Length: 292
Image (cartoon, rainbow, N blue to C red; front, side, top):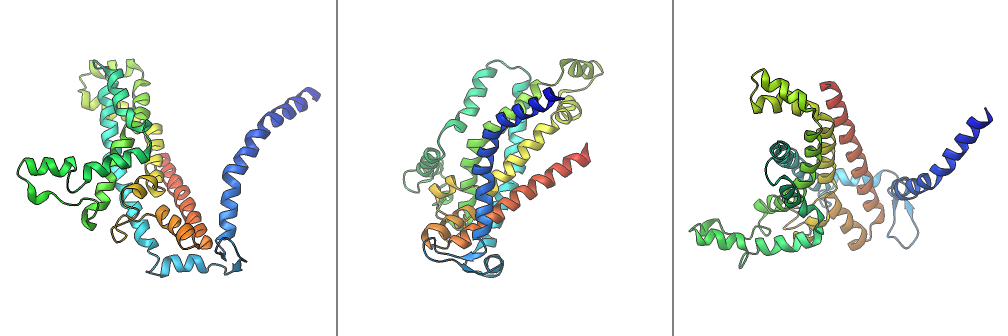
């Protein structure tokens, strides 16, 4: 019995640094943000308790534009799930078959993940430049001058133009996760299906994809929560413009905190982002549990 208690004490001691780090880095900021969300505070002077007024203002005032920012994030999440993940899955299935140059393709597709998002933003700013950007130059060179435009300066195209670099940067990340799952499928399952006359598409549909559902679930959670909290790439490309066409909750939060000195409102947006991310993660977990 003494030995058991001693082992538990040793385990607790070894876990204590990680627990303190977890509480200090994750739990404490959430608690503090929740606390500040109930106040009207400019970050320097005295705080004024206003209860749920910040939350009410977010959903009732058109001047703040939170609902517009939230809709933009949900559109990015929908595009990520509808375009980015299927493309990443297709790449993973193709590479998982064991093609020539498999490792080289993995490195090439994963390379954008390693590049700084600010650098990627600057790169795509040059690509989208209305005057000398390669996209407009290409369109003009093939006689499609009417399609050339200021992609990041037009309300109708700005959000889509911001999604393309996101797709380019993170498709390799999801591809690598799914590729690892595809390679973990027991070869005997594939062989048995092929002996029974199954085509490659049927093997993927009925064996490989069901087998890697846990990884698909993780990739979907990452894609949706990443879209909800997207910030750096949009900040570099458009800073939420033009006319809030690409505004997302994170850019709105930074605007409230550092430009308008509304720390209470900024904390409120942060709390709602946390709730949304956890909420979507729980929903996806429940959907995949029901399917299983």
